[in-house]
Image (tube, rainbow, N blue to C red; front, side, top):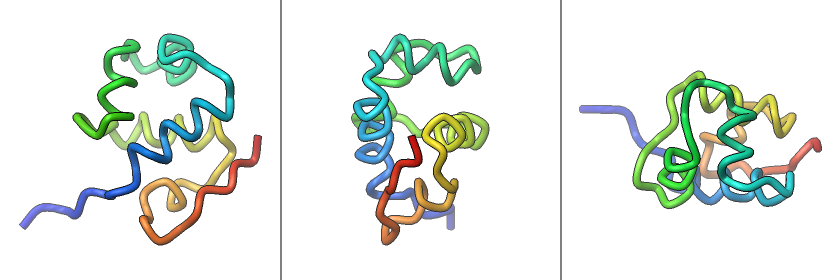
Length: 80
């Protein structure tokens, strides 16, 4: 049995990018893990899941606790 995938992760990642006013390309550059805008698009459409390192980068960029990204019951309050 694998781990449960967060259902609201894609929505939260999109919310972060929009709140920052960044394009998908700019967000990929900020994450700085060798991903490109296509990866960001897939994350936001729930077609792919970021690595733990990429999730941590999202959390740091948005100044939120990592658990707020992956916990479906937690609301995302951005610390931008």
